[in-house]
Length: 519
Image (cartoon, rainbow, N blue to C red; front, side, top):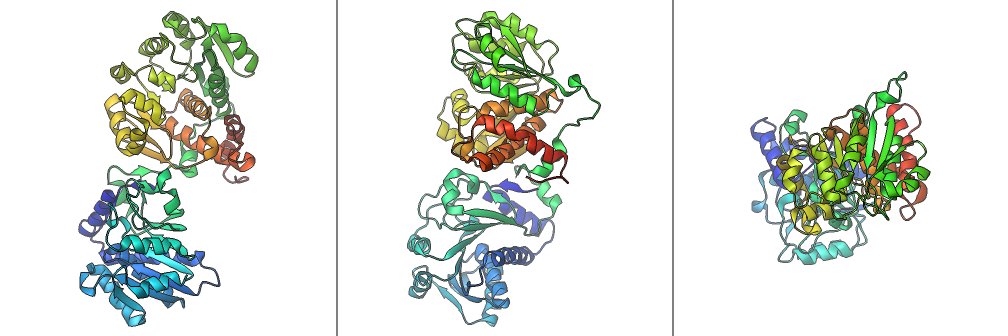
């Protein structure tokens, strides 16, 4: 399991490992440097004859010096510059500097603007290893550091960062000034949440995590870490599907949505629900639009609901309640619109049913002036994008996006439901404090209708009996993986939500039969 966290949590892990578990800091540093070296060696070409390691005074610099020592011992030509005096180094960094001095004369202690360092950077060595700051700095780089960073960025060398590109804030990923731009970031122990943000992409490059030797029990005992979703977990979460089962065994899902001009959204949700295993799917839409739904649905069933000018209204409630009879879960909101009275109809429906529900799009917006009623929802999953959540909170989408790691667990707890905030990365929290994260940036899925597919997937898994947090995690990761497969086939420009639905079967088949053909 790979986790995502903040710089503060990493420092807490380091402290606990040393103080509570008795693991020497030197062992953690050696593990980090050894594993980073192995990864760096995989990146080196036969022509990689010169490696420049630039190390800071803190422990990130110590990790870099372990890398320098190990690469030197394996026959590479390595030159190390330490940005500080010997007496300024942290204990473990100083220890590794002394070891390296015994192995080579090419260790220099200098300032960031030292002419010899600048010349070496500008000479374009095969690889530049950035081990200057790591998580040791959150603010703007000052003094002569910005100029050094600019020279590094201008170099034609392949650039590799140890833990974090210097100048990149670990928690936000949005540098306030200059930051190193690398080809590869080798992250120590856990991903830092800022590196997964879109703002950080040009700085981080490809990212790989390596172990520093934290015991698994220690990691699991620290609160506030975001476990990353993956295929192995998804296989474990999949509901059973006995060969002798019938359609009633696999859940009945009711999709509630649609309005004049937005009939496609509930259709996508309904098809996604069927493609992900629900036994029966029903689409409750405005009666005046039923010809559209009935002619478009093959496997799902349409349920006409009385409406007003192509949208749900308070008078729709009796039909909606009747439609919920015998259903195992609801997916409410796709294409439902914001007409007067529609929000009231949604709130009244959910007030009068105890069925598990995934609430999306304008179904969420319908609670804008009635947030307290969200606390009354039972077994609910909310799936807003930043704009919809901002509408609830009376703030702006950029603020919601910036604070996603902070807001989601707080609101999930306040409202007593599972909250899923779409975006990069997608973050999920249960009311009990369970967390999950899906990091699968895919610009092909940045299109209208993608969220409706996700709603159908989560609704399907709710109907199949999975708890809300489990359904949200499984639906999210299935959506991610199907989107990846769809992008490989169609390209990110042409990928459509319907293409993602078409690839669901391949992903589910691989998860259920991991020994078969791979994706």
